[in-house]
Image (cartoon, rainbow, N blue to C red; front, side, top):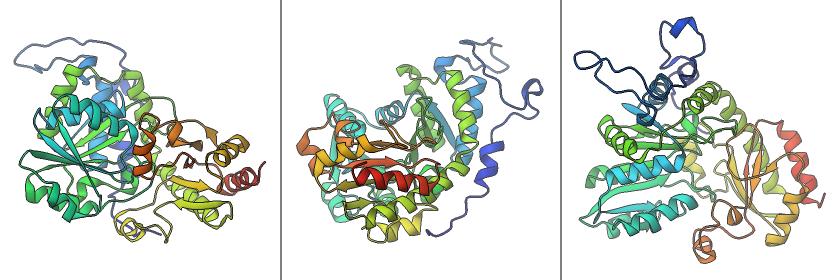
Length: 388
């Protein structure tokens, strides 16, 4: 088991942080404020305009307070998607002529944003090894402004030297940014370790029920304020009803993630012993190259894993076709187990050579373990690996 780290009652925060007291209209559950605009009291009172596009309806404000409390952030912000959060952050901390460092092996959508869209805006990205400070120093330039990593890479499940990243950024005045989607605040709270900004695709674990798309940003108040101003212009606001669903989903985050941690550990152990499986990527396995680092930093190893089946793409497709419990679909973090082949989904926009360079083979299978009984999942995986 990973080492235990203080979370200061995260399960209590999930329920109570940010909630209006007394409850609005006596409602125990915050209502949906499905109003595009709100009365403007004018200067001298509360002079702020409230409008859905500005992400500041009562539904947004409660979410912001709760999310900030979970990762001990000065401020937080929700967005229309995880990619909206990433784009708003990078467009806020970087300008034309700037450079950033990015960990190799990033999620395909982030990789495309950084190496295609930002490149067209005159913002350059240098890919670096996640645990090689000598590589970082060699790539550092006077125009480098930020360093972007993932807590656990998607889908290769690597864990960078996160403590060294923070120290390097502080030494050189860089903004440290981390995508904490795979870990969630239950397993890792980056701001406690010195990161400036923590991002999430709230579509995944934070919501946990595969029924909305949303993003979140937590961190330093000055940076979050700058990001909000950029987001106001981009218009990537989260609808109040989606806020309501995210708010509801958050309340069970601790229960769900701890169950998914245990399920994924059992599934990874099973797969690592199966003769048809040639490789399992899961930081909870002692054989994983970053296991000791994950054990030291995390409260749990997460519900995500990936693996290779003997026989490549054909074997992977036959395996997917034989499953009965996990749903073959993109995305992750829901209560139901989801399985996909990243080369055909999350990383389909990358060239085969680029995928191979980051360790994503065409036959790699990614599994998001849900809250089903682990023994039932294992039995289903076993029969699918045997050919149904």
